[in-house]
Length: 316
View 1 (cartoon, rainbow, N blue to C red):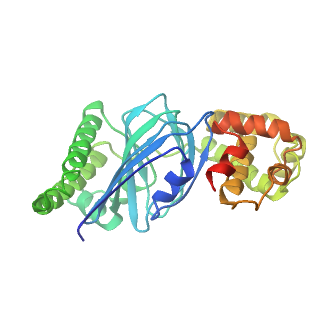
View 2 (view 1 turned 180 degrees about the vertical axis):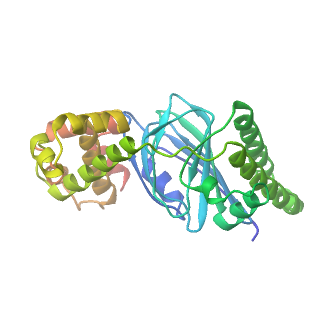
């Protein structure tokens, strides 16, 4: 396999989502205001690496390309994000296990580098460093790196991206870049081992994330019906205090705010997918559980930085 390079700048988070076609994932915008983002994607041999920048808070849910482990290091962030409900510090390394769904709630600014490595290749590198089971290091979680190790990963990945950007003009560099890709995989294996096993999620936090998932599924089944906390609690078999605590602990927001944002994102997808003259905004409003067109348009603009009409016009 040779070296592949691509790039994208966009003000549409769904376009950013589609650009990573090998990933089985979905984005939802959760921070208010117009979105802006960029991608620089590379593939050299078995190593996939891309720089990803979101200038608005995004809720990511998904799975890395089949057969790979994904590792992500932060370059810049406005504040801490949450990976699988746990706070992600600046020097922490996201470890998304092979074919296991991950979930990330980003800060309003998140600039990062993400690597995808075949699970078998990463496991082999780890096995050459330690006698421990490689699965201990590549299961889904967070590797708490030292500031020195995190800086080393940032420097190595940025240096690699800088070199690969020159590849188009200097094809003779291909062999050298393949060697750099192998060295980068070795470095990532080493920092995973040095960080020891990624911390396991606490049982209480796991239960709280389960409550959120069940809530999402129930609200999706409601269709155009309004949200009522009392009915929701009875359906889930929890009291309101437990429900409120679960959302505050794992998502930093209230249930109603979280679910309204979810429905606004569903409405945006409906508008985004519509062709000229195929949909009326009023129909989308009511079909997603909003009862007042004016309030819907106001909330939509606050979240996405544009009106529903703007979204439809941009799709034409």
